[in-house]
Amino acid sequence: MKRVFLLLIISAITFLACNSSDSNSGSQATETPAAKEEPKVNPDYEKGLAIEAKQNCNTCHRIDEKLIGPSYNDIAAKYAGTSDTIVAHLAKKIIAGGSGVWGEVAMVAHPELSVEDAEAIVKYIFTFKK
Image 1 (cartoon, one colour):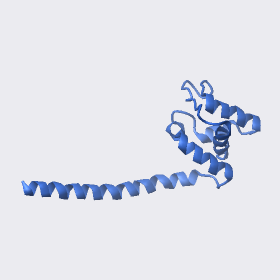
Image 2 (spheres, rainbow, N blue to C red):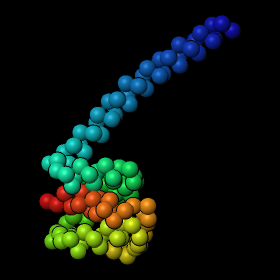
Image 3 (tube, helix red, strand yellow):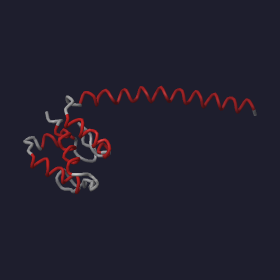
């Protein structure tokens, strides 16, 4: 019985040690491509990224690929002639949600966001214009 228990403890320690090194190498691999996509740091990028991360926008959106919703690159390209009116319009869409612009899937509403925070997210997305 003691041998089985000792073998079980050693196996668990080995398993945990192997998993911790794998998870570090995996996170490094996923961070490198994202770093290539990030534009030069500016205030709109910094502020918008912080809010975007809190809202978990990456659940539906990616920088360079369509997931559930459009990619940030596609949004930035579609609204290339950015004006304050466009920023305000898209901020309202983030807050109210909606569908039809990018397909059948509806954008989830974010009523807890202030207009200022929603506009910061839009400006962040526009930093990906090419």
